[in-house]
Each structure stands twice: as structure tokens, then as C-alpha cells.
Length: 145
Image 1 (spheres, helix red, strand yellow):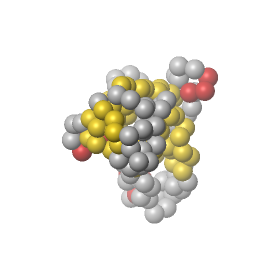
Image 2 (cartoon, helix red, strand yellow; image 1 turned 30 degrees about the vertical axis):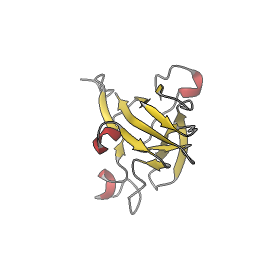
Image 3 (cartoon, rainbow, N blue to C red; image 1 turned 30 degrees about the horizontal axis):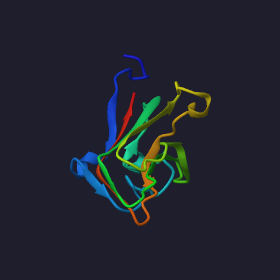
Image 4 (cartoon, rainbow, N blue to C red; image 1 turned 90 degrees about the vertical axis):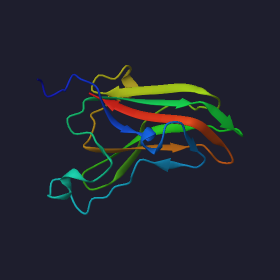
């Protein structure tokens, strides 16, 4: 098999918190946890919740079943260099203000020039836009290949 791993796999999913999660504040999948450069063992396998090594392309999918208030939910892929410096929102969904679904894809084979990017080793999924609002039945998934 090639090093591009042509088979899609789930890299991170909010459904681990239970299908149909309610979100009422900004959050993320997990911050940088390393204590040094990513090339120094043993922390090389534990810097973030999302390991993008061996991943060339990603798709970030968001589904919302209901809303309370006036949300403007935006879900993003943030990436980290090997020292833990964050590069926020390298990919972001369009705003969700009502029930529905959004997705954004990017990577080596992105669908448009603005989505071409070489993915680093580490990432997180973050969400914002829920000031005085909430979304119910929310599912967020990051899939890669």
C-alpha cells in the first residue's frame, strides 16, 4: 500500500461524547500537550488528540439538528508545529445558524486553491460562535486519508 493511505479513516469525532451532543460554548478537541520538540521521544506520539502523520487529505464535517438563540457556529481545523505553536483555522466551515450540515475539505488534493495545504503532524478541531446560543444534536467528525 502506498504511503498516502488511500482508505479514509476517522481521525477525531465529537460523537465520542455521545451522539447528538449539545454545544453551548467555544471548545476544542484538545490543546498541545507536548513538553518539547516533536522529534524528541517519548512525547512524539502524544502532542495532541489528532495525529495527522500519514494523512494527506482531510474533510471536516459538521451536522446540527437544532439551535437555540442565534448561533453562528464555525468549526475549524487548527494545526501545530513540532514546538506547539498554533496556526488557527487553516480550514473552517461556513457558519451554521440553523439546523443543517456543512463540510470543508483540504490537504494535498484540496478542492480549490485556498484549500491546498501540506498537513503537519498535529492538529485539533475547534468550534466558536455560540455566545448566548447553543446547538443541539451536534456531530463533528474529521476524516482523513
